[in-house]
Image (cartoon, rainbow, N blue to C red; front, side, top):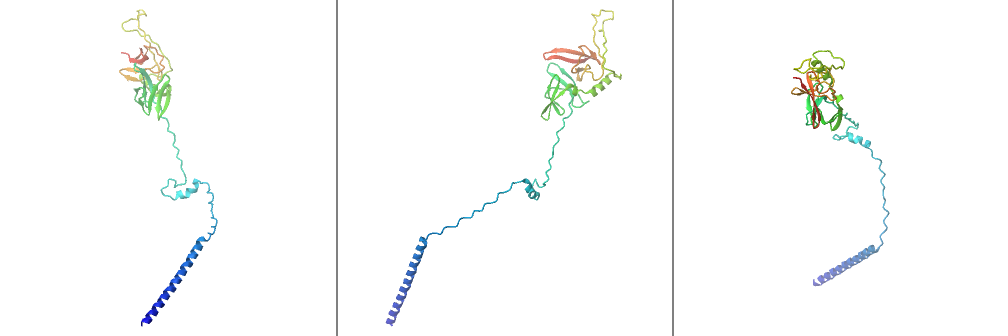
Length: 261
């Protein structure tokens, strides 16, 4: 029995030695192949293929009409572009001019925003309807409208219709004739026709028709009317029951018409 065990041990030891030898030989073979693989030169890589993209065409907005037309929230959904041209705003009619006055504090003009409307005195800086009065000049007025300065002559702003109607009413129904003037010598109260002409006070009474600049201008209150530009009648002239007075001021001559008492 003991002999059999010893024999078995020897067989097992021989088997272990054979397996170990095979493992060792396999290890050496793999090591040689691994070293040969590492020492072998690497093959050259093939050249890389570079693809060049085609040149893009010219970009045009018309090419994207189809895309924009199907986008519900795009402003360009409708390919038909409608250009709305805003027409320039028409300049309104200038205010109507009825006269000018200067009481020493600077010139004032009598204007009405509309023909036949209420008359009022204005100074530079006042608002007259849609316009703003900028300055008062010898030849006319300068207004400001929509940021633009527009000059206007007195002849363009004169209310001829209103002046003609006023002349008809003040004339007591007398028929209008051509521009004529009659001069009448009026003797002051308390004097007689036999007295010397030197002692008599003579005034000039001018009878005019509507539209004449020699008539009194717009009523400024207190029985006083302003003078119209270019009025050639002398101081002391009586027209339509008003006497023309011209006074000297630090700013020049001041002209007004006062009702004859």
